[in-house]
Image (cartoon, rainbow, N blue to C red; front, top):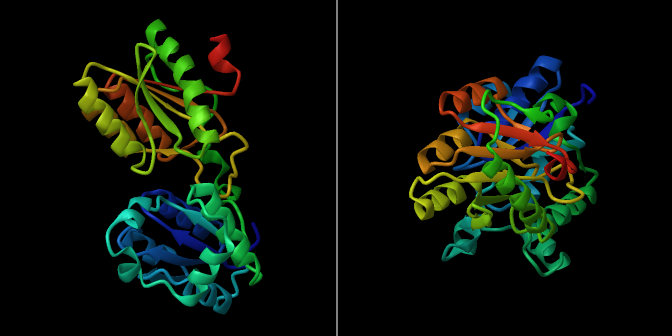
Length: 283
């Protein structure tokens, strides 16, 4: 990535903070637009320029990026899509004319890939090119292998193999990236609520009996957005829910604060393993 300013549309979680820290270390100016109520205030001092997105205004985002000379932009962090399902959503978000034009042009379903690819195409019309945050953070992608002291048990490997196929199919359908498995039965499938809420829901169904979390990338994952991500909160929620094993897709999944995540998983006696596409069939 060049030393020209880069735009950052920041959602919830640690990923935008890690990106801004690395960009500053490399001397890349960051023009950040943080989603109000989701992005962390910790981002403000890390960025060359910072603005809150308080309404659904695509015109505002484009103007701020263009004024700062940021022709490349990226997105990082979780956008809580469930707010789009709340009553009076349009009155609360106050979309501008550019958003209505964008909605009119795009396809009629509201899957993540549909919305985000249409957004990227819309911003391209104004000379704003979407890049992957991983261009400057390739080290966040988890390497292949068992990352913890404990290896998965034979029963957990069976659940991983079973869950891998299900999770890949859910990704192909653009429903979610994670499934919760126990005894080769699917307890819960991630959808609009996100991984953490799905883990908690699985724990309520399992009553701390122990289960496996399988989280994978979509087939032909676009690395510019919606890359599967886990962090310390994931491990804490697994512990609260009673999950004992986490399987990730190597080279396609972001693990934030990797050393701390593995240390915490070891503390709780969990198994965390990362595999490529063929691993579940050969282990």
